[in-house]
Length: 112
Image (cartoon, rainbow, N blue to C red; front, side, top):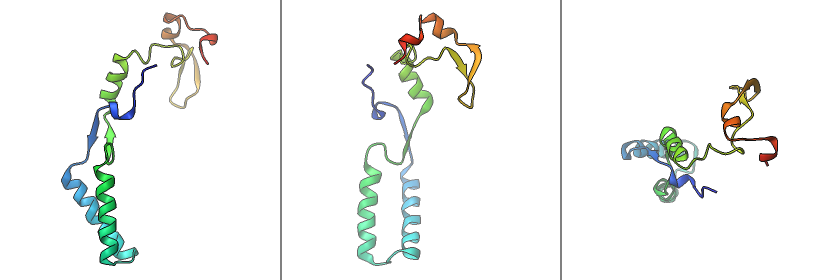
């Protein structure tokens, strides 16, 4: 087992300027559709700051770097991950055999 969580992957987060832009749009929306009270705005700001400062919030995983992390842990080199046949973009099995399946010595019994 790899024992990897999402926080182990490299993240790309929005800048402080972009975060402030999101906050300003939030304020405008709240004034248009919400209560518009200053105490409500302070509460929303507090919650916004809490959420945006949490690790991984307003961020996305750097997919290329994440795949490099997984490759370094040999994540893809197991029969549970592999399929006997290649999968097409619509997640349908094709007739073309996956050479990794044979290389790893996989059988249907290897899969859970």
